[in-house]
Length: 285
Ligand SMILES: O=C(O)CCC(=O)C(=O)O
Image (cartoon, rainbow, N blue to C red):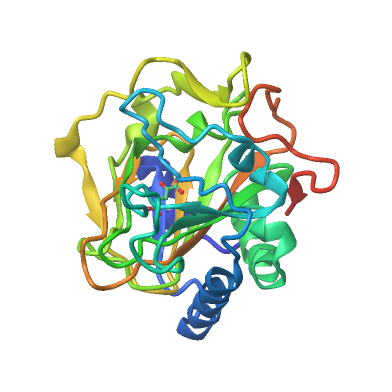
């Protein structure tokens, strides 16, 4: 059993758990190097220049095109909101312009596949009550210096919804994450008193995505605590815990890798934005 009783209690009480030294600085460096290689090698040619905007509190700004909707079984690149000038030209190098890569790294990229299919994670998932844990998506989230965008307050189960709710996030710091370069912030215990009342789904009238349910997530900002972590840290997130991250205006990048599990025995609604494909069904852990 990987987690101690105290760690399980902490997760139960806070809705998140910080595990320093889950992986080595060398591994963090290798994953970061691989992320940099993906950024270097990706081509702008034919790219629809899709930006990633969570826009969770500002109506319907979320990217809603096929490039996003079909990314579950692909390695796709999403730009920062502020990446382009008025003429539609990149304001900095393409490597510095990407907000995130998603959502099939855990199945398609050998480095991230090997890292994700980790017996320690499988062990943790069973300790958290999973019977049939499935990885349904993975992401590299960058926050490059000066341009890294914020991630507004949200609950992961709004985006990765099952009945009953089951999503758990595994978030790996590939670099030191501080208040200056965009570490995570949490409202401890919010998973217990903040039900999932909004869902991010495919718009039945078109190609895009919409939120259904409550207009917005009401958040008491004064309850947030910030969690600075070192490279090599794993943070486990309950799907209902309210969390966010700030923009990165510093001169240091903040690279993280994350994937989410859901319970394979739970119902997975057909209108969820992310759908498994024949070529890449959700991955058993
Ligand atoms: O890494 C970040 O900045 C945000 C990640 C996050 O909120 C998530 O994966 O749910």
